[in-house]
Image: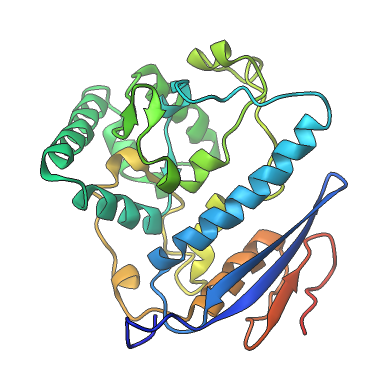
Length: 274
């Protein structure tokens, strides 16, 4: 952010070339060069995610398949939704900015969900995601789904914060029959394969804290999750954060864009920079 909020933030352009299943995509995104709170990068990361999703959808549609997900089909909105600390901060901001009456309704839904999870014996596990092993995640997700707890933002089986929905929600699409989503199993749900998942890399916005950040946070507990010093403290530059995240995504060191364009192609051995 610039010191003078009336002035637009100075940015450089990061260009990302992606090859996935023989299909190519390019995204050019403006990245702020000054100190930037991670939550301020969410619009950019949503755009990045949406581009990867578009490439994945084009790939599956080229095979004759079609996306089953439609407005009004909210079965997946009863699944355990993993979000990052940054997205938890965003969720708290979204709720706080709602009109008073609407805010009270949404907060009550979060509370009801917490009570139901407590009664089901799932709350403590969800409050300690760092202690969940990979083997624990599937049964935990199944147990959560069996509670049929709707997302607090679900309205008439549609997302009421669709433009600001979490990255993992954006990345979840299926080509299997929509009716199967009511009782999903590995054999009945055919998910769209993403070229990369930005949601998995969110912890790596700041590599200095990646090892101490929780691997994920349940969306349904976002309002009770404590804000951290690293989110509220002195922010790093937007370019440094985005370079760290892209480096994790593509498994290679990405040079921080300084004055022009940074290009990353996950199919090549090294980034190409001007």
